[in-house]
Length: 95
Image (cartoon, rainbow, N blue to C red):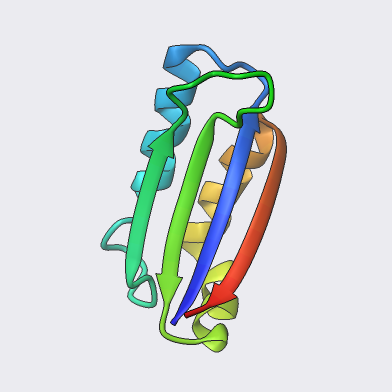
């Protein structure tokens, strides 16, 4: 199992902007068959070092993660997220 975690810091961290980005990410649920788990959380602490949104996804294999990266639905979501994010960081690990 491969877990893919991405944290996003948005240009506009207002509640509506964060909710919109969260909804766009959640819109992948049930639409990409390789995606075994999808979780999206929004920051509740709002510290100086906090990011606004966490995306946690799981895949059966590294090959599935790579296929997800180029899936048309993911690419459309990434296009939107790239337009509203200030920064992002990611980690991928095997469990």
